[in-house]
Length: 351
Image 1 (spheres, rainbow, N blue to C red):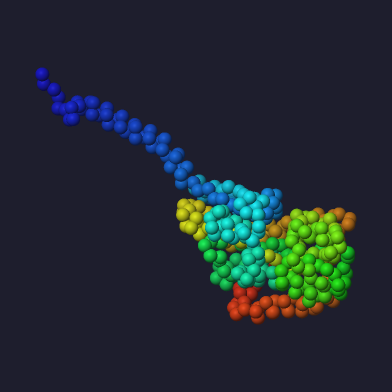
Image 2: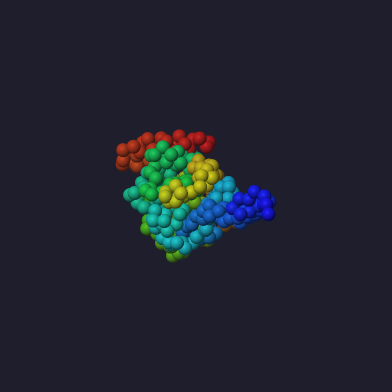
């Protein structure tokens, strides 16, 4: 019996059928494997915050930023949020968490590492920046120029400053001279110098959570803090007299572990580039400015709260006191004059 031409013992029809089955199997395998491949490509970042879950910085700035980045990452990125010191409670530990990889990203205050990041203190100089958005942009421009250092083993995704620290007092003030002998809590050497130059008695070494008790026990007559912080630290319960004079701001950075960043998909890096850097400074700074306006207006609707500016006759005295702080800071280290120039120029972009 004669048979049609066969290959590997199969008739041509059998061969075509085998190829069809193989093609279908490959297609099915692709459909089944593709979601797994996509899932493997999505990176989950561990983001740490030592601040309470409902803290302003968390809710108004950092989480919205991360959500914008994730939305533009083309499905390559997600994050897991660890607030309230879950990965490390001490504020001074946060940078180390990122450098060692315990967290991929964290909220870090360079001021909590004294001596290592003194250049960030440019944001604390009193009376230099017009608002928080301006101060944040000025600080970012200085970091971008390399005049503010990036800590080892990290990449700084964004930088923002707190709102301006102003006076919150238990008793009313009408002029600068009324500060004489008043015990005012100040954070850091620059705030203390500025307060002392105006005739007050600056008090340091009182942690944020301890301020309310110190006020209630008459260990303090007032505090330098922003309008948002007085609510979060319950300072508003004892200080109802406010003076809007700018004693400077504190820089806050959002670093990511450098190796972790290098391993991210390109789409994730592009999303961070889009929403970080200058955009983060502008958006975060505006969030602080808007919140100050809202908080301040809300307090002043309450009958017990008042807010003033020192009279124009005190302007020269305030300017002299603040200029002394600025000039002394500049003279302490070479290059600070250039840093201050960059900061001021960057801040002026936002006028």
